[in-house]
Amino acid sequence: MRKNWVMTSIRIKQKRVQRNYILGDSWLYYKIYTGHKTSDVVLSEIIKPVVEKLKEDGIVDKWFFIRYADTRHHIRVRLHYSNPERVGEVINGLYPPLKQFMDQDLIWKIQLDTYQREIERYGERTMELSEVFFYYDSKMIVHFLDMIEGEEGEMLRWLFSLRAMDSHLNDFGYSDDDKLRLLDRLKTGFGNEFGISRPLKKQLDSKYREERKRIEEFMIFNVADKPDYAPILDVIDIKEKEVRPIASQILNYFKNGIMEIGLDDLMASYLHMHMNRLFKSKNRLHELVCYDFLHRYYKSMIARKKYQKS
Image (cartoon, rainbow, N blue to C red):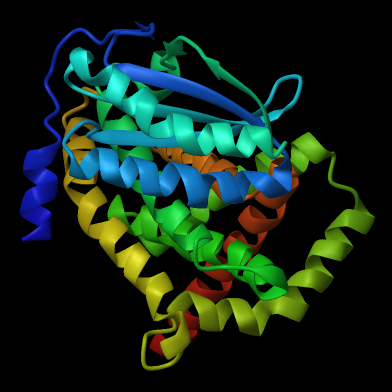
């Protein structure tokens, strides 16, 4: 039943893609300036409950967020509504909790801005589908953030990133070899960006050896193995059911040669934005480490499968 809801609730029409959305168009764009630590609280205590109510009331049909720093760290939240006459209800829904956080100095500035789509990055044909993907990824992440706290939560955050990225790649039909190839590209790119040195490589080697067992267990555990972590599997499972119809449409475009960008390029952007949403700070460093670890995991898994066959 849920799959049918996903297929019918968000309709993608093939038309000339609009690039810019100002206030009054069908996208409302907030910049919420807050601290790194407070950003998770803003997402779980303001954005999550308000957008769930707006969705339930049929006012907003999708939304997504990213973390950003131009002059100061902030969260960028984009909300899509089909009836421009109801934009006031979106603003009124967000106003009370945002005002409360501002009065407590947890938020220091709020701006409304023009949403400018990155059409060249995501492709004209796949731009709207990408926004739906961002919605499902954002929804999965805010539900996950609502589950974690303290030191255990921070450990789960990076472990979750590995399993969630693997889930995204599964949704788009990536084989083990495809995954390894893409992660090799990503970890190499970030290694070049950081100018990876011998000491840094040794640190990564040492850290992976230390965490290897934990990673391998987390990537394959089920509810019977870790009942306390069942909600984590639930949010990933829901996301997979929602994303797969979108992935199927994108893969159809790819197979028919009508995508403006390569599938690996699109997936690299999806994984990058997933990591951006999940981590509060030092996002590029987290990407370097997590891409490296996921690459090592895939390499080890493929080698193990080959050994078992021989």
